Length: 575
Ligand SMILES: *[C@@H]1O[C@H](CO)[C@@H](O)[C@H](O)[C@H]1NC(C)=O
Ligand SMILES: *[C@@H]1O[C@H](CO)[C@@H](O)[C@H](O)[C@H]1NC(C)=O
Ligand SMILES: *[C@@H]1O[C@H](CO)[C@@H](O)[C@H](O)[C@H]1NC(C)=O
Ligand SMILES: *[C@@H]1O[C@H](CO)[C@@H](O)[C@H](O)[C@H]1NC(C)=O
Ligand SMILES: *[C@@H]1O[C@H](CO)[C@@H](O)[C@H](O)[C@H]1NC(C)=O
Image (tube, helix red, strand yellow):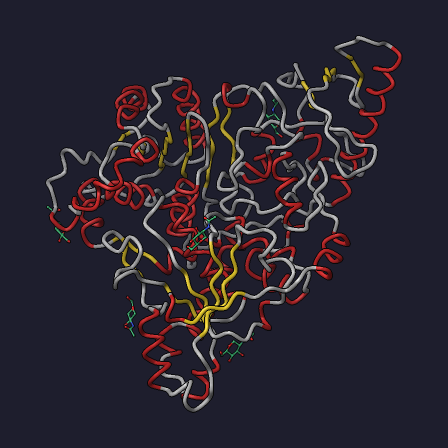
């Protein structure tokens, strides 16, 4: 496990400040100068700085500069090696920006997430042994009526976002030692036609029934009340300021948690008790351990419905599970830019699985034409399989055509295939044994791709094996996407959002970057820095984030002290 101290980050901060000062002096003395050449600490490195924006950041002397390192491809200029703790013997050589590959290098084959993921698997297992439905439903009335629940409610919108709502509720139930309820709509689970839910969770219907049966209101005066907290209302949510363990309401509903970030907000909650519950699940931020929390939760909570499973098996009829998944989020684009970088990413993944001569690759895309575009070149490297819904013999259990009409407006986002195909693709893709590659024309590592990688990694992690090869999640970037560094990865649902700030180099070439299975919720890692939009957004939550992602904890403490504790409670009948 690697320990990334704040020290290194402070050095970066210092360097940025020094550079800013030098820059200012340069501007003052040589008026009109647009380019400045400065010799850095490393004499082999020449960097060109140019000011692109100068907004104020809370750190007094710091102005935001963007650094154009025209020659970072120079082999002498290797940021990751100059910063990696192993070869820094006390003295840290510092560069002012990194490429995505350099940022991702720590998450490579040696990252060792499997040990942490196995720890979290045991934690989850233990949690559901105690708080799972089969144990809780047989509790004596006095215990049952004192028991707490967290409810997950999801609509049938984008699968990645909606699944994260369920998984966040699962994570919260673990942090709070409560049972999980998965809400239904008119008696149906979210995506219930395509997904089967395990019996570890309750339905609200059953909880209501048990509440009556055990006389919780009549005998114990416990009303089945839901406390609601809306994550997307920064001024109202109590996610950072409240000790949720103290909440007395039988049911808690944390709303609008559409990505991996929301649950990780508890890592910065002002109450030590909440923080340590979050560390237990997500690992301590300074240890940079990133257990596959959401993958392990999914493995336990969901499986494909029989119809989806049959479709998946129709693709894998010839036996073996695939080695690698390539998921391409193209949003109907016909751009060829992503093809080359995706192919080199396949090669990089293959280098890591030497024992397989001709790997089996599953191709998944929202844009069917992309599959025919890349397939010929991909077939030169690998055996290619994909799910062709047009050739799949129509299975009545999958044909929910009445519904698909009102979703046609989403076809630009989800692609032209019927809705259920996304679920066949999802469960097919999550069968990959060694690697998942996420590529795109614009946004890499979307929630859908993250969850494919997370579930595949969990599926391939074997608790009885001593040699778990690290599962690889790779992001394929083409240079066009990196012209301004990672600044376009603006959504919190994108795996690289927390790296998108000023520490990301502009004008990078095609790359294939190792990606953490658990997308970071904060900016604790050395190369992580926020975009200005997120600095502003976090400010609304009461969090002052510096240009390099450090957090002013005192400010948060005093914000929370002055914050009105508004609790929204609704009777369960309104759910
Ligand atoms: C950076 O260093 C790594 C090893 O630490 C090496 O594999 C890689 O090729 C280097 N990259 C460049 C651009 O020199
Ligand atoms: C979790 O809850 C169960 C029963 O609801 C209780 O027995 C157990 O002690 C609790 N564990 C913790 C760590 O609070
Ligand atoms: C829950 O599901 C598991 C596995 O599917 C099964 O073995 C077990 O019997 C089920 N428990 C109950 C109480 O239905
Ligand atoms: C938050 O969730 C609630 C309930 O699902 C929904 O009504 C509301 O529109 C959501 N808010 C946003 C901003 O999406
Ligand atoms: C259709 O789905 C059912 C399960 O719902 C499965 O048993 C059957 O084999 C499938 N048929 C085909 C043709 O795949």
